[in-house]
Image (cartoon, rainbow, N blue to C red; front, side, top):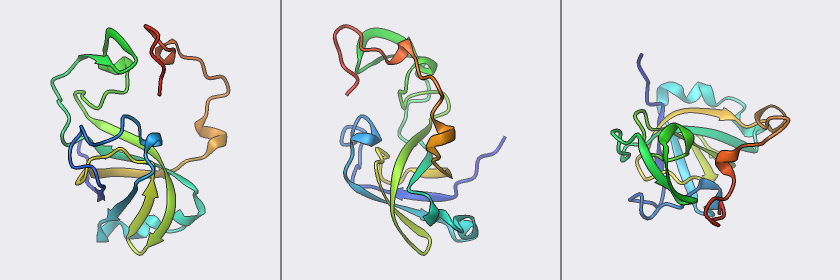
Length: 148
């Protein structure tokens, strides 16, 4: 298996401590530079209002399997939470596409650290990306802690 870096994220966050907990909490503008050999893949990207941005958590701890979340003091397995620390730190955000300037996408809604490698970009389609019935105990507030 081989992943290819298709671009790089430029964000104001230099460390994980500076980044917001969730991309949806960020109003900061970020830039996604797509490398020259992948520019053709941007054709018609402007038709999307939101993008699913998949990127590599290059500052993540890949040894972590159990972690605490901001929403509970009860430790969980990394596959049962959204921690960036995981064996394969493939992270994602749903970002608002503000503009396209050639091979650079201007977006809002990323919590990515500056220099994060981009793995893929897909258009977000509400009709198919939201399950008909959303119910997850994992996302219920625990210990009196709210999600945001």
